[in-house]
Amino acid sequence: MGEDGAAKDVTEVEPSAPPEEIKDEESVAPPKANEEEREVEEEEIGEEEEKRGDRNDESEAATREGDSGSKKQQQQGPLVCHGHSRPIVDIQYSPITKDGTFLVSASKDGKPMLRNGTTGDWIGTFEGHKGAVWSACLNQPATLAATGSADFSAKVWDALTGDQVYEFSHKHIVRCVSFSPNSSKLVTGGFEKILRIYDLTKPENDPVVLPQQKSAFKCAKWSTSNDNLIYTTLADESGLLLWDLRTNDVVQRWETSSIVTSIELSSNSEVVTTASGNQVAFFKAETGDKLKEHAIPFVVESASLCKERNCFAAGGEDMWVHLYDYETGEEVDCNKGHHGPVHCVRFAPDGKSYSSGSEDGTIRIWRTPTPKTAAEEGKEEVNGKEEGEGEEKEKEDEK
Image (cartoon, rainbow, N blue to C red; front, side, top):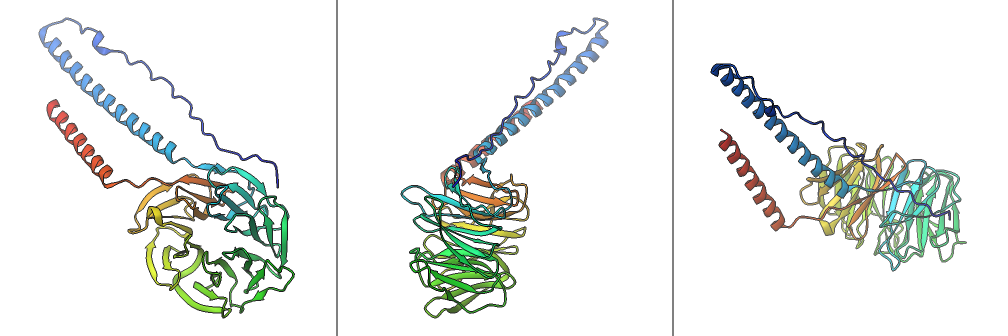
């Protein structure tokens, strides 16, 4: 696969220069003239002391805010994963395995990579494609990886050795690949406007070809618990298509306001998350009933749900990675750092972190903030009230 060498960003903060000494004006005695001059000078000194005190208070407040901001930034600072030389267009986590969690990435540089899903450390690169790689995924045990490329091929790899296991030729660009729950089959879709189902236990056999559509396939996800269901979206049509392999045809069409650019299935296949235009929607996987829908103030390219922490992540054209409350749609966190649009976001299976891939060629792994308990929120409210009352009392004493 390649030589081990995951790069990490280290931000060094230079110590600030010591403040200039402020001469103590009180140490300079006023000239002794007559009583009126001394009174005028004492009033001027008093006014100067008040101004100096105000400046010190402002400086101290700014220092507190700076310290607080530094702590917040340090707490939320991402792990930055370098290695790709072109935009990252797809990232996928494996489920939790006995060896941990793994993260695979697809990039326009044509070199899909495998990483430790927790630390972001580079494990290896799957070498062999001759064009941009648009899709990458892992099977549930994380022993196989699959990739779809602009070189008109889909490949299956041994995730332990990095060796190519199978190569399936196509007649056009392959935009999406996905394993069946038991890893015995692979679905591919792309610019040919058809889905192919390959039997990995009999790779020499011709694939099953599903009915052609009017538009290219953009996304295809196999259900994580049902071997018969595949969820797809099209590049030029809104909505989501649910295929049933018992009939080899579409059995449901779910309506969306615009073209769906990302779909995600929860680990238990209960919820399907979609990103389309300025909307993030959540559907019941078996029936297509819409559970929630939230308007987002930017064009969303990808979204990911963490039901255990009652939040979802979204990224898109504004180059930031946002975290929202699942129930209300209220933004609870905003992560800045990417230098280009965010094409893909995914939660780790344990929900403790989530990753983003961007036009800037980096993957960033963000820590999920721990939800506050009602007791903690109440304590913060009491502390804030006490601080406010203390400040008001100080102002009254000064008067």
